[in-house]
Structures are given as C-alpha cells and as structure tokens.
Amino acid sequence: MPESLPTTAQIGHEILPPGAGVLGTRRTVRFYTADLVPPEIVHKLLEAALMAPSAHNVQPTRFVVISSAEGKRRLADWMSKRWRRDLTRDGTSDAAVRAQLRFSVRRFGEAPVLILVGYTMDEMDPYPDRTRRAAEETMAAQSAAAAIQNLLLAAAGYGLGACWCCAPLFCRGIVRRALGLPRTFVPQALLTIGYPAHTPPVPPRKPLASVVTFL
Image (spheres, helix red, strand yellow):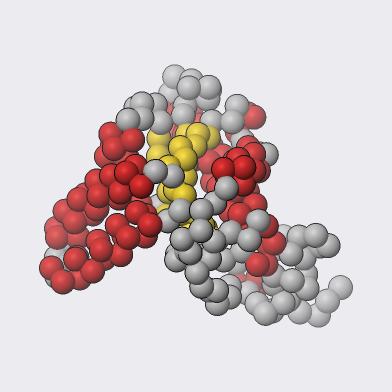
C-alpha cells in the first residue's frame, strides 16, 4: 500500500490504466481554428455519447447538432439578450456587459460545431408524488451529464477541442424557441467543438485527500 496519495502532477498519466491516456489529455478549449469538423467525426462523437450509462437504461438524453452559421448566430444572439438583462439587473457596468456579451456571441457563433444536449422525461418513471418525480428528473440530468463526458473524451481522442457551457440552464425557454424545439426537451448544456487553436495549461486539481473519505 502506498504511503501517500498521488499528487496532482501524477494524475492524468502515471496512475491511468493502459489505453486511458485520453483522460489526462482532455482540456477545456474555447478557441478553434477555422477547419471544419467532418460529419463522420461528429457522428462518432454522438455514438460515444450514446454508450454512456443512463437511468433505467431509457436513454433520455437528446442532442441537437448546430453547424450552420445562421443557426449558431441566432442561438448566440437570443441567449445574449437574456444574459444582458441578467447582467444589467446584477449591476454589471455597461462596459463589462458589452465585453462579456461580445465574447459569448463570438464563442458560440464562430465555433465550428455546437451540440446542444438536453433530456426528455417521456420515458422516465411517472411517479405520482413530487419527491420521486424530482428524483427522476435528477436522474435524467445525470444521464445527460454522463453522455456529455463520454462525448468530451471522444472529442479529445479525435484530436478535437471542446468546451462544456452551462448557459442553456439559465434560458431554457429561449433556447427552445430559438431552435424550434418542443417543450419536452430540457436543455442542459451547449458544447462547442472544433480543432484547437491553443493548448490550454493543465488545470489544477484538488488532492484526493481533500475530496475523498475512506470508510
């Protein structure tokens, strides 16, 4: 038994099993080259996402792939209007609001591919009480999160960069209207995907001793 837990520097390569190096190379990438992502690669990413575990194995996660310039720009513009309202209400200065919105619209509008991830409750267990219905909703959200992680790891394996953005959580109705989605679609995240234009540094990770309890 080792005398101490592995350090942050070790996590990502040395402690990973053979063939799992992609876990240590995945990074959050926010800037991409202009190179297009081949449709067949996008399909591979979605197939990887579908391999994730899901509640009751009903696979409630849903995906919307947005690659047209018009679709990306419309979604970015609609979401930015809600964010502007929220920032202004929070007392953010006009200059800061403009800067943040400009970056947001550019990030979503210029990413080669956007994948909106959500879930539907159509096939989840329809319990009559509020407590169990809420638990089912949480399980659907967890299923979507597991699918997202699979997709991000697959993207890294194909040499792509990706960023998990939670903006849709704050404007679900706007996202649905912008894309013409049904009310049964519950937006969870917007993934930007493309070939990296930069190499992000290794982010700091908390030591295991600060987050794990062994009983």
